Length: 223
Image (tube, rainbow, N blue to C red):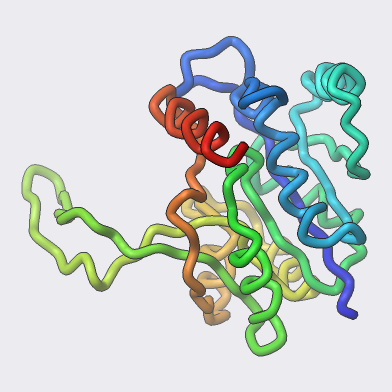
């Protein structure tokens, strides 16, 4: 079987949440958001290599949480860099899997079916990304003007974004550019096609207080 790795990025500091505690450490149900996220991948594959990128100043706090919650899922903590780009680049130096997923630490509701689909499609494609349709009407804003656009031509992009390992390592040999908003954008920059698979609507990125309220509803529903 193809060996798998996942890099879980958890470098946020909670500005939009309005919290002194980085959002990945906030309690969701009985344990921190980040633990729920890590467990998603361990549930999918107990042999998956899990690499967790954390801000250097918060590594000690994470170790305290691990002991407090008796968290025993094997994972390797990697020191994060100044940008998300730098954190993933650091993690890639330790990756051993033949295929690699990159996932947001504050997306604890990715379905097992989506994870499976992303990894399976790597048998045919080099880059696989989950996405969902846009339900609302959208408009493009340019300076002081705005225009209606066809929502059917757009998708909301999620994680995990999955790659053949050597492809991802090659992508991260590029110099950092502010336009790199996710890993798929690096592939696009190098003209590598990005294959989309259906994501799941519950796969929210917990960033604001409203997101946290939604997450608390979802976790209560899943009990």
